[in-house]
Image (cartoon, rainbow, N blue to C red):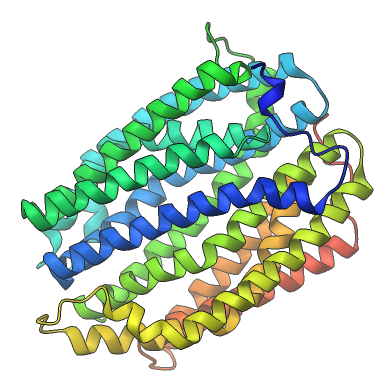
Length: 452
């Protein structure tokens, strides 16, 4: 099978059905990934305890912060690759892949060293509870040692999606998350290896996922396989132009999460455990909307690369309707089943069970009322990434996060509110970001940002 045969060209034919056919495998894969992330947290919470769940939550906020820049650069490079593919500039496409491999590999090793060496200092900055510090330190260092696997898995799957291939990344993801789930159960619940076992199962499954992604690309998508790496300074700066805003956005997201984590830690271990549980549920709940946004970006990027603006806008509007409908359905489900879902993460014998449940239920109950606003914000964000307006695709979500963080601290420090303040601050940020995004769209400032 040739390279072109396994890829999807969105620049011709119908819009709605091909777009959803493209998005559904991504949606299934990300759903399974988040589902197994939830299962991991449930296993840790039930078999190790609320303290271990809190330790994992604190550590992951740092892991995601350090990895954010690589994820952002990968996202930007994927949009560029989709535009090159839409314009049928395949030589530039392969050069862009080569440059990104060199850059991301080097950056990954630097971040790994930083994460391992400065792990204690990073945990202290977050006011990590002394009772969970050792577990958090061990988990963080193990996770950072496997960062390179996460980066290369994300890179290959993002580039596959940029070329319209979503089925094989789905199969690889399904296998890796099942492997991770089985290993976590065995290492944590059977062998009683605690937080160490949870971390080992995660990085091993990421290694397998990265290896399988590379092997599939080597066999079926040779546009993504570079036999001899070479560096092109012009494409490097183009990748930076597209990727840096996304990297800044991802870093801002994770920095905000770290600042919020620091604030949560002030309310104690039980609050941290409750909000960690809710964060897993929230990630699962918002993931379908975020996935549809990524699918839209690929569609828009290919069509803008082919100079088909009207078709790109039509796809944006169709997907936006699906995203809003999806958000409403998820909100309705969580409003009914939130208490039962949070209870899954907590051992019946945990001394802090009542407090963890109370914090979690109040926090999630506030957020689910506003998922429709999240859908609106991310529909615009996906469109701006696709048209190549990388700066604005970064600016409005970052503004939203800054507003959220400021309001969270203000409501706690000035209004004397508890952990629920953090929940109320989130839709405030989403709402202001959505309004700014809509105004920018109507003014058509995003026109003329395509790279090709």
